[in-house]
Length: 220
Figure 1: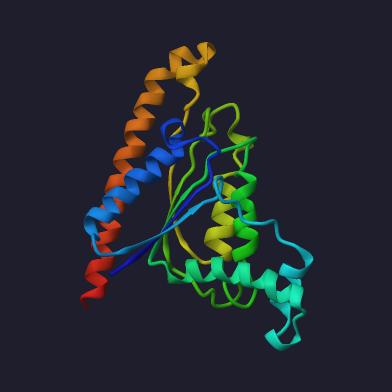
Figure 2: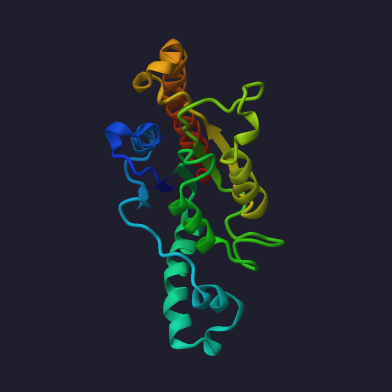
């Protein structure tokens, strides 16, 4: 059965996090389609990945027999994350916008899994893995909005996940998530509600379509 890698990075709990709510909807739908499948869960807020160190970085550029004890230990932690990505048949990532970009915990995970010659380079080891990113944000950074130029979540992840790791990346973008709590955004609440509904609908639709596609491919 297929394996889903589910990553969340919001500092907020499920009930208060827009990205967690949508990734949860994706996962529930996936599990309905694959009741006997596997879900690898990474909550980067509850269990942060260590920042990459000199030992963790340099170990990726020398053979196992050449590594020091410190390099071997540091690389083992990276290898666990890399192998989780490589085992996954699909990935869903919650990536809320913090100060115009991704949470530092998600950046740290990316630093660990990006290994030139394995997950990156001419033939990335997870190339083509379908990946859905839930890129929630408190405002709107869509084309034509005043802050269009401040959007460094989607642009960054398209470069790292898509062009560097070679994943097949798709986005769900719940926006204006602070409107219900910010009086200055009161007139935008209907747009927030529409965005929220659309994001949940997309999560269910994309999870179901992806699960069906992988089932068909496995049966060939």
